[in-house]
Image 1 (cartoon, rainbow, N blue to C red):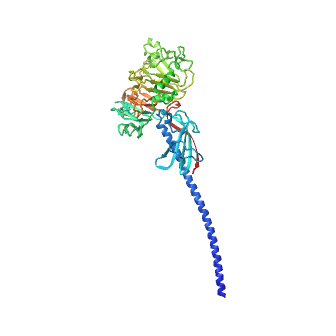
Image 2 (image 1 turned 180 degrees about the vertical axis):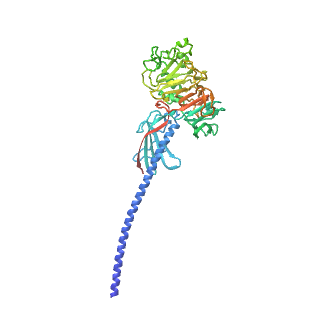
Image 3 (image 1 turned 90 degrees about the horizontal axis):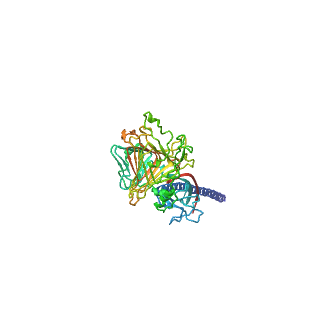
Length: 544
């Protein structure tokens, strides 16, 4: 009996232990389940955070893609081709979370990363209801990106960047002939980036250097462009396969005068000609001027209309610049002095079909963007030299042998952004020339540079243009070198010295020249080379 009672007790104790173990196991399972649930939730949240960050980075990349897209298509004649449009792309079905409409913009991906897609567009307004017209500044770039159902939208306010604030020089044509020609014995120093779309021709014993030389359109020119010898010490030689396409001068004119994108060149240049200020904003010194300081007390409107040709005869009725002529010099056998006649150009547009400004110590040109002579509103001075039938008209040579002075604010250097020369004479050459042996109004030899604070733009045949045009040429011709050919310290009796930027179909250099890239301070009326982000915002969401 005792054994039976012991066995029963043992069974009862075993059953109690089993129940205890089962209860403990259940509690452990519940704890493990909760832990797994927390872990899975944390993991999911972690992945979502990772996807969200990836989507944000992809949206940023989409904004950069749009800035590059704008720069690449700056030469497009139609505004709808200059940037991505705020419309749904055919075939796209993706929708932003909470929206019933298809996401707007140009779809894209990033090379090397196929896990997401961005959709980007540019607009005049922040809401994205009005497509960017290629002119308005600031404008907005909106990019939505999705990575594994996680969406991020980035909105950037951007300002237009001037074409003149990118390169020191750029020869954008490619017609089978050299786009940059450096003559034998010449020396040209580029301060800033120098770029080409076509071949380069360099004569013997010449020097042509830039801190950054860029061979664009390298896919069609594996040789014959800039080489290592064209890069200054410590500089860079860059190769880019596609060409850099700039708008034609006529495209710039269309936008400058509010013409439609599909208006002809003739319509655009007629608008330009009708707006010319050659008879209303040209000033000279008063006959009673007390000094040569340019202000309203010393200056008055020039009564003559300069017409469509700017040449030396246009100065003939100008009063003498105070302090430049002293007849007593003749009595004492001193240097023969001359009376300097000055034409002062106020802010506005000036339309010419020809420029022939030969060196004459008695002739002076002053660009007055500060409007000191008139007391009017400061602004850009723009020269337009245009002949759509230059070759047929025998009008293929324009020359400026005069140094050009610019007014500026006290204590500042002239702003090259306040003077522009736009040139459109296909098959013609616009030459800036520093003659040998020239003398000033007092009879002293001039051994200093002829300075030009401006931007020069001369594009009639962009790379890839299939028309029969041959392009415009700009030539810089300084005095011949006296020593130091091929060195970093050449000497001469004066160079042609550009302070600003020059973009042309073709460029030719002879003698001693300097092209010093100087960013424009004020250039809101310039053609656009793309955009520059000035503010940034984002928001994110998760879709199904």
